[in-house]
Image 1 (cartoon, protein in one colour):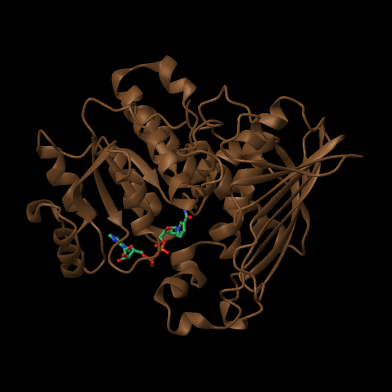
Image 2 (image 1 turned 30 degrees about the horizontal axis):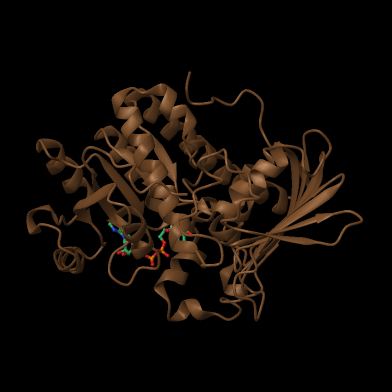
Length: 400
Ligand code: NAI
């Protein structure tokens, strides 16, 4: 069970950049961070529109003197205070992640950043190097990776319940943008504008989520990939609203990833199927409390969250908050991640490397791989769907 008593001496003093009034994802961050008393929201630069951001901030109970017009002002002013913020979450459009993360690390803050972490792999490595130099952590908000059944899936693969992995089949394919809704939706407009979104739309926006779950569950490394991408709504070009990616993993496993915003009629359809030599597992984010487990030659089983037959010995596997049968969902997954971020930041500040190493969370490396996925898919797709090597040799890993 999630340990409610696992408090910090003091909640982490926390600020937010972006995620202002009416934003898509701001509330999810606040709800998750504030859920367990591990963070306290004391400062903000919520909005590009300074007055709206300040007004929103004051309404949420943040001191008006700490409801800042810009993130630059927030970092500078908070640094001068003895009780200044220790960590910040960044929930702004993709184009700003690099500069805001960099400024936050330079101001001596731990960072939780939205995905995709940066536009380029080189920028992501720069952030990793800076975090290392400043002795701070970067968490990346792959919000689905806090679901207990995802951790169960990972543990099943690790323990060999499936045998060697042969095929990975992943998709995140919703139908919400099957028409040109960006004409009236600023949140979609920036997503299909390269200067704000980056080199991709659906690959970065949703493909990275499903990809991260595959990476995390299987711990396989991609060797090469081949991507085909297109925009069915033509005005979105050069960004894609649909993409198919084929993957070859080191060791012989293969996979596919479908990312789409034009899968008409679909809600999310984020599904991950892992096929091993003797059994398969399948998880669907619309039914996150269940994990389908199919052993060849036997009747399929549905494993349920919160049951004693699940693996219990890892903090992630057993982090359900209520017993099986009661539905847990998206908010709990996010809160599980924020709890991990809090304990990791605390351990890092105390120099407690043993504890820090035990806490799994989506780190800067997860952010780097998401950005690499985008970069490599574009390289492949824009060269006629060529197979491309996934990792370039000799790339600086950011710690040296
Ligand atoms: P949005 O367009 O709905 O909201 C963006 C917010 O950031 C607005 O309040 C805007 O005023 C503010 N903002 C923009 N630039 C700013 C700046 N320089 N300083 C302060 N505030 C600024 O965008 P949405 O959909 O909430 O996405 C934000 C980020 O979150 C994106 O990177 C997106 O990819 C990611 N996201 C992640 C999800 C997840 O499941 N982890 C789900 C949805 C979005």
